[in-house]
Length: 448
Image (cartoon, rainbow, N blue to C red; front, side, top):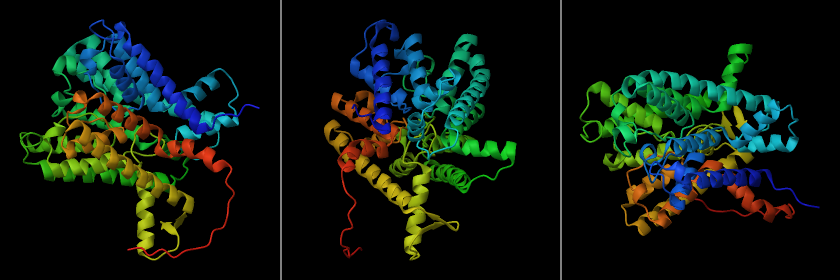
């Protein structure tokens, strides 16, 4: 009897299949503005970055790709942001096809959620919410872009950047108008554009489960869960803390904040803090940041957004569990207690494993990238944290990476998007399947 693939393997191979198709399309002559075949590695890098909603690129999206190529990139961003399992469940519902228990399990794992009642309905709400938010964002951005680029370009730019912002992808097509790899630096002091993009980024990175909680609160007056309350407060706190720290560290740096007015400095600091939550847009030169600012930015990139969202990173929930467990240990408590609630030990172990593996992966990758590419260690680590957290901002070294460097970044983007816990599960599940649970003798292990 043929064995079925595990849910995690299906998710991994599903993402690989989408990247493969995207790569094939992007290599075709009609995908490039020059009408020529594209190097397969460049196409693979772009397809992976789009599907994994990262934003790191080796060629400028607005300059290099044709209208068709940009459309492929946008479609990959949308699929990667929502997750192909979400779209599959929605199409199954529209076709009046029964969603099997296995498909429901696939969905919960692809969204990094616990089992949820009526998952098909939840997937439908996720898609409707995402498309509605992107539609509103596209209209708001088009209002500004049409006046600057004309009707056709303005509307197209509004749609592209709205989807890219909500999906926390960080891709932009401004290069043809404002200079290659400029991101949205030309709008650094545009309060309107900044706040629309920040709203979209935060909406996508908040997590669909949190928004569903808010919907239940508004329509049915149900209490918002402790998890949703906590991650909203922690997310808001991280944004404000990030903006304050960046403002203090960069206030007099003429290459980042120093050349602007007081409001301009505040706006740029706030946007930088928000975009570091895995969005990838940039209004200031990342390579010009002080070393201390780069280090702090790496911390924010590593944390990322919330579970079940379009954002990457280890997620705010993981950080919350790690901090709560650390505090409980310091207090001498046997269990991890948070707001008079006990967090299950399995969740604590998973959080610490995720945190530790994430640190290990970026630590080794940054060292290897610096050594092979001959770039400063801080620049290499900035790129590695950006790829692993699917952030997409860069100090400028990505376009000049060698084949090895590009393949390393591709691996990190893929690894960071599908979740290192999923990769661990896919690798270890078969080895552990036949193991018998044994009770081993206890040992006292001195710590500290």
